Length: 230
Picture 1: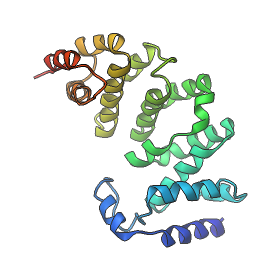
Picture 2: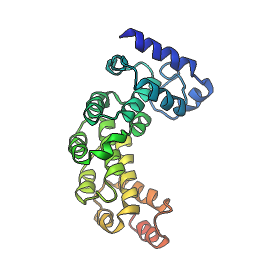
Picture 3: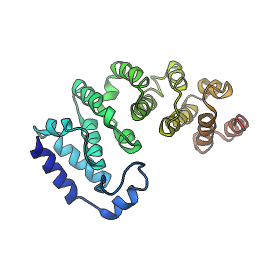
């Protein structure tokens, strides 16, 4: 196992950009220069594509938790490129408990999921009940990405509105979800805001994000502003 793990780590250090690391470390809570190498996202994505074909990659994916943030990012990108839904879901389930920051959570987006909406929805309904911050955040992100347009159903915002958390990164994702939903499904989502179905902070943050969106009309923005809880 050590071989490929060491090999990958050496490669990541070859791609290191210390200035980028020092900038990035300020954006990711809980990370410091000891746990971050500083590899730029395009380089990680490119490297992930080559590693997906490596027959020893399983050893790296099983080597959890990883030591470095960049290894977590690489792991997320490898999962995102997997073409076999069953394998991809298995690796996602295995990795999610170790995701400990918003960047890895939000940048993990398996392409194969869009071809398996029914199975994905079953997984989402389990993830959203988790006690882990980033598993919940990921579930809401997947609802936002895959079930906001032709696959939309009012049951999904109801599911999201039912989440109660003290975690900033969960509540921020709920607000982001409702702001996006207002832009795409305004008439269906408005009653959630009018009926104050979210906690106060998340309610006001969802309105703030909606008002910042170019997809919401000036009239809608004025009305949404009037619904802020003061």
